[in-house]
Image (tube, rainbow, N blue to C red):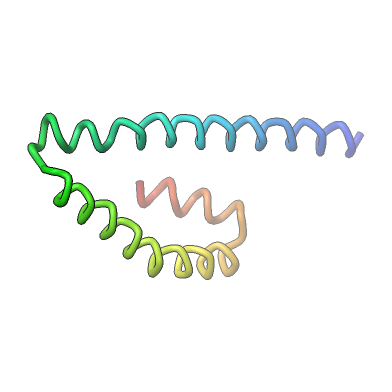
Length: 84
């Protein structure tokens, strides 16, 4: 009984991660086009936007990892639901 539940959870989590990364890559691929056409940024300004995003990730991801370790996976979902 436990193995069928674990197998189902594995496939649900795998599908959720696949969906997340596919939608993230689709949206991120048109982000530069959006910055150029609708916001009016040139190439240098778009590079600054991407650099700032990477720089912020360097500081935010370790904090997120620490919180995830302390809260646990189930509580982290609740925390992210409240924040977002």
